[in-house]
Amino acid sequence: MAARPCPKAWRRCSPPPVPGPAAAHRPWRPSHPHPHGAPMPPTLDPASADAEHDVSKYGYVQELDRSMNVWQLTAFGLNYMVPIAPAIIFGILLKLSGGTVALPYLLAGVAMLFTAFSYAVMVRNFPLAGSVYNYVGRGCNPYFGFLSGWVLTLDYILIPTVTASSSAYFAQQYLPGVPYWVLLGVFSVGTGMVNLFGVQLMSRLGLGLLVFGELVVWSSIVVWGRAVAVDGAGVGTLLSTQPFQFDSVSSLAAATSLAIFSFLGFDAITTLAEETRRPKRDIPRAIYWCVGIGTLTMFACGYVAMLAIPDWRQHIGDEAWLNTTLFQVSRATGGEAFSVFFTVGYLTALGVFNVVATAAGARLLFGMGRDELLPRAVFARVNRRWRTPHWSILLICAIEFALGNFANMETLSNLVNYGAMFAFAALNISVVWLYYVRGGGELADGSRLRPRGEQHLRDLLLPAVGLAIILYVWAHMDTLAQILGTVWLAAGIAYLLAKTRVFQRLPPALDL
Figure 1 (cartoon, rainbow, N blue to C red):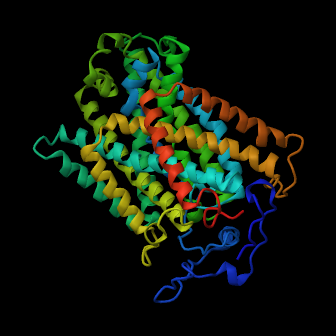
Figure 2 (figure 1 turned 30 degrees about the vertical axis):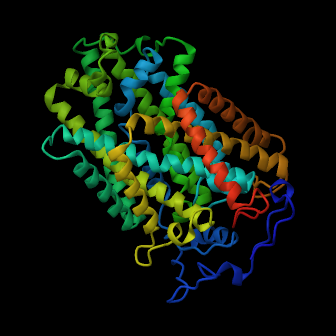
Figure 3 (figure 1 turned 45 degrees about the horizontal axis):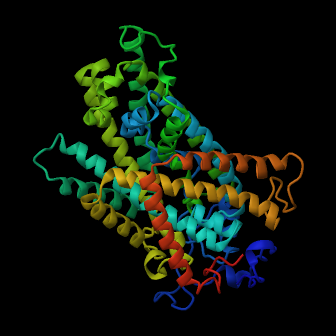
């Protein structure tokens, strides 16, 4: 067992010593031994031996199956970002910005790139499942980490709900005789079953469907571009400033805030740290690939599609047109057959998204349950056969079905943005705190000295710029989302005060 923390351990304590073999292999629930004995950790290949050591030194037993490589992680993240994501909010971004979709996605990608650097730094220091919750809690302050996890948990619960609801509404247009709740149940149960059968099945499924999703997106861009350049549709040329026009800086910032919704995928990658063969190397690489590919895809989609609809202001008052803008573009430029192809791709992409969104949410709950910030008996349970957090998965699916039937989808989408901004800001703060206040961060060469020379760029300047961008965009978010998100945050503060007896004790298992 790791040494007890010194007073105010989140400020200036040295890293705990690596525990001995007894601590490294303690039972899953020490006070309640498994009736059949402690579950055996999965067999690890040599490449992942260092990852097993990293988990055990935090007092955990490696229980999740380490099977994912950098390309499976990248596919997981890109599927979570949804290759065809612009189709969901294209018209809304167009209306918010006053004429551009490409710029909000480009600016959102730049903002996420700075935050991605912070994720890469923190996963090298703390290669554990739980994402921002673990990184902020261990790198900055356990109480701040809990609040980050609390707010982000709302996102991971709401995102699958938004996607499943959108899929059900869209499918109902082709199956008008089937009730909405039945279609919603099919999406919820289907994604839950895929996740229950393990991350390896999920990764095999996701990689193939990702290729199909990307094919739909890029073939659509080609069809739209050909109609503009060859058939004279829209502005009649591929080189134009039309896709970059906007009403004001504040309107552009508001659209950028919404566009960040589509970039939450690289954060989902970090929730698989304990299922990755070499997390310190592969997770940062997958993060950079996701942000780069996602930004390029969304920017290209926003640019070319706007070339085909220079008369978009005629439809600004038509809510149905705004919700299906890219379908209208596809039908006008590619005909009915291509419109069907685009529709099939849209539903497929959302189905894959729901699989990975449910997985990420369940694993975030697993990390918080294991550290006893949520009921351990439910959230930290791992299925003995499939080695997946089955109760967390089932709970996500149940909430998805319930909220999808009773909650407003627009309100849920706005709340997601609040959680993402709070978590990203907290992460950037934690990098600076870890290296410059505590002085305990791991440098690129593996040492734990304070940053020096060019290391200040990575450990101070990049997270500071990322934080500044996030705060600026956050200030231009939807007012209702800010109010509701703050209410949820206040509920988290109240729960934390009760759990820790007004900060008289540290949250369990986050002793630094």
